[in-house]
Image (cartoon, rainbow, N blue to C red; front, side, top):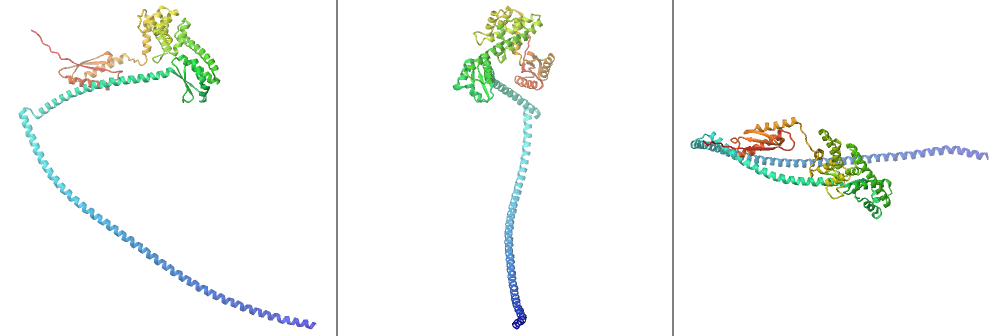
Length: 515
């Protein structure tokens, strides 16, 4: 048994090296085979790479050649185009040179012809000057005057004719201008009166009540308009509710009613409860407030003037005059001003100042009721003064302040003068005596400086200047021009109110004696 094992071991010992050697040889052969294949593949790859590189090189060379050929063709084309354009420019330049040469030839010909014409004109001028000299010599021989004398004579004739024609033209233009001015003045006055009247009517017949918001308009109108109808019925004033934002317009010719409506509406807006019953209540309250206001205004006027003892009803009527105007002037303010002026004039003359103030304050008392009763404000004022036991001095001043009745006292004359002063005061002008006399002297000096003026007189307080001219030096036609020149000189050098009339007078006198 052990022999078998030993034999097996010996066999294994011998077999293992042999198999190992065999395996090594086999692997060596396999490796060598692989190396051979790798060399062949490497050679094939190198050959392939060389072939590819050669191909790329050839392709690149071909592309470069094609690009150079294309570039060359483009350059050749561009060169041909530029040559063609240069040839065109050259042909144009040649044509222009030819045209310039032709024009130069034509100009030379024209210059030659012009030179010939100038020579001919020079000869003609010489001939004309010779003929003029001969004509002047002949005219001087025939007329017996030298050329200077004839020229002066002709100029004088032309000057006289021009003066006459100018004077006639100025007269025609002035008459036409006066007609147009009168027509335009009437149009302007009428237009101004219309505009002024519209403004005064607007100011004295409407009042504007401001609203907190436009929603209040609907509340003032009320359901089916019952609120606005109630307010208009109670006050006698029209309410105009239009698109004016946050405002209601009250329209009425009676200012007292309009004031009542304004106060009542403002109270209703503040209260917020607007319905017919509330409207009646507020209108009654407003009427009472206006009555109180009228009484207070009358009392304030008497206190301001310093007149006492006037009947309460006359005081109330004086307060009503606050809501009356005469030609845009507040009647109460006018009466107060007349009373103050009357007092000042009476004091200067040593008369009863209080009586003068009383008569001045009450002189227009009839205007408080003349829109409610028949008759003029003078008749109504006299009736009121008699009714409330005013004295005869006051009554006479009231009835005579417009000259309807003769004034019987100096106080009545004072009231008449004070009323005129108060009414005419706006726009009145005053000048000092020194300024006045200086202006008159300057006016006469300006006129006397004109040639042909004998003497001049400033009359009508400087509103007219009468100019006496020397008849031998100033003709009838020259008078028109002289008056115009004087007017322009006065306008340029003087400052004066209104206008100044320039009256030029030419008087011819012939004196003879019977022997």
